[in-house]
Image (tube, rainbow, N blue to C red):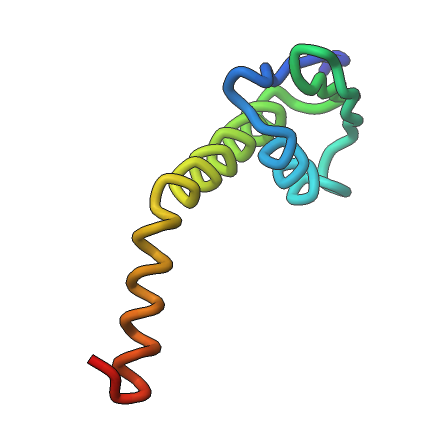
Length: 91
């Protein structure tokens, strides 16, 4: 178990995705985040490789969720609008 640093590049990961992963792992493993010009660096302190891998997977999962949400935002709004109009009897 060694201290390790991983840089989550801003080309791939949004700050929101890394922060969401941080909230999920807060209290489970010891780490801290530092904003860098090219992304967010996460310093893991005495964490197992499996825990670090889980953190990285969660950051990727959150980024995929954010990207999918952005890609489908217009379609989601149309579906919700149609459902609301249908509920009040509009066609």
